[in-house]
Length: 100
Image (cartoon, rainbow, N blue to C red; front, side, top):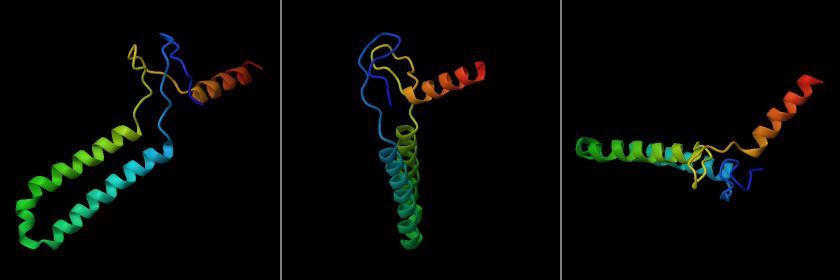
């Protein structure tokens, strides 16, 4: 469902990431962050010393997974965004139906 060549520079494009893998990565990041919070609560007063490591670690983990899951399709050769084929096909078909 993704074009194999960039419409701007005709470079070959890699296959897009699967949605399942993206959702799994984002879910695991949130589970990992919540596990870190739970383990931190179990440590009692020692959490004061763990917070400087837990908070940035959890934020970085969730942010990286979010960027991976919702990244735009970009051509590596020219750096321009490439619209997924399915979306452009649906928009083109809607335009055809509107003209009819």
